[in-house]
Image (cartoon, rainbow, N blue to C red; front, top):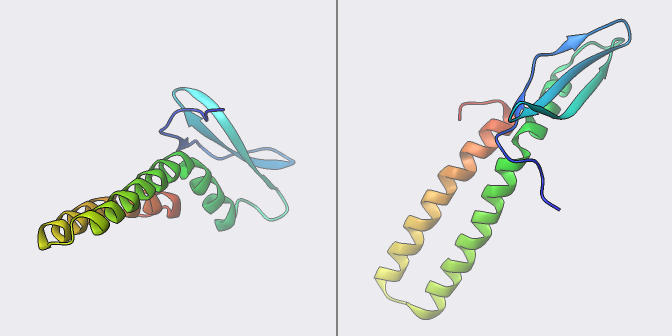
Length: 112
């Protein structure tokens, strides 16, 4: 089964007498709604949960890419022991690290 395509984004927080809600949107449709009770308000924890859920597709994409980069690096290490192989590995992992950092920043609500 495939998940809804990315990007996912946090919608506007809404409230009524019984709860706070924040929809997570993708391509004009609501993927999921994060709920919070009115007794405690919309807390930093609720906001963090919504950001993490919205970042899930990118996190999955980058985790998959990291797994592939590690497999490629292992191949290079096992088959190309020279300095050229090391340079390729470092470049590949450096690029992937930048993608990982961007996905993590989105999940944490920081700069992307």
